[in-house]
Length: 284
Image (cartoon, rainbow, N blue to C red; front, side, top):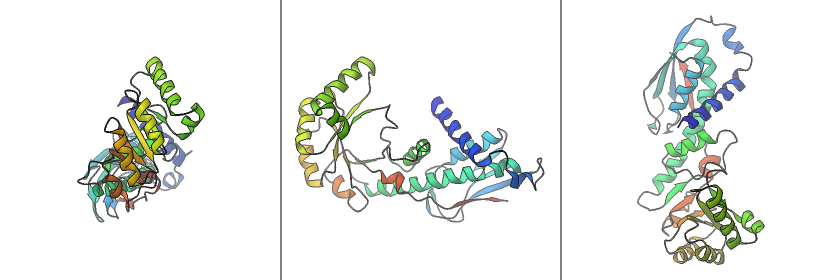
């Protein structure tokens, strides 16, 4: 948690520096430095609220003594006209934080809302929804946080927290057996406890993982499989590995994949197709 907080603060400080630069001259030019005031975050669009903790942190990086009064919490369903929070303090600090707060919360709320739509679609099914690494550079922390707020499950955060043997790794290594054996030896020697996932492109590769991956591979990705082929693959794997379907899955066809009994479906669209929601910060 400490490293996560540190990473969050680094991200937010950089965002504030990007926006403020050598000074918020709009505010400095017309408002006395000791002026105090209050503002509310007003909701203008339906969806799932996300980023409340982020907003409070932005304000406190500007002024640790600022007063932040939440009226809602992350994950709440929101409707136009509601107020998510009230903030009280120096006007310079409130206005200097405004755009970073809105950019983060609008983006996070859009992702959380789209994720909730997928999660609700899967109600009653065993299958769970995963995100991917198809994220905005330097904003992944908040985007994956928003997926969790929406009820989704995070896949690996980066290249460092899981071994995922994709098609290029397999081809460069000379095949699935070689890639699995080398990765397993590496894990035992240098990264104990690191999980190994293997991507497969056809049923022949699924059979190779089933033969060479037992006790080494924890999850098999079934990439661009039709629901029919996915059922065949699940029969081959016989419940000995976690399973993940990926590629071309969207709201219109996700139930066809969930009906196969696959453990996870990964959907990059949770992040890269989410639309920011409309929020505003207004003086009160």
